[in-house]
Length: 176
Image (cartoon, rainbow, N blue to C red; front, top):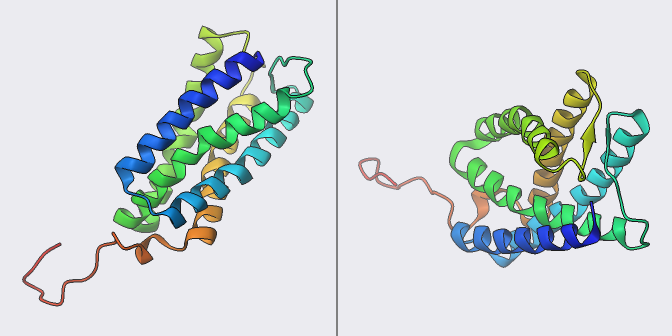
């Protein structure tokens, strides 16, 4: 993967983040929480990449430039951030069960997504054979969601405290 690819993808994810911020009507506090979650998960993801390469589960070819890994970290932080606005809305609407379903979905959808990318763009990443790389990839996705959502919640507070959260109606005959 080249630095140019990382920059272009990071810009695309930044546009996606702006769109998700707009459509979820996130407050400034929530956006700060999301960015903190993305920054934390970016570090975790770089560590997961290093661990996966060390264990031989996958390989990400990198430029020999000194700024490749800082750019990779920034790209991971930006690309993960929109996820936490979605988990925030999911938890606000469906509670902890909704978050659990979301986590299971990313664990199931994430590895096939990554394997599809490696088939289309083999210069970006390669996976080893066997079940271990698939499981490690799924665990990485689960950690991305859990850690990022936890940091976002720590910074911005629980979703029920937002001004857009549903409140119980004082009149039982009136629905939200």
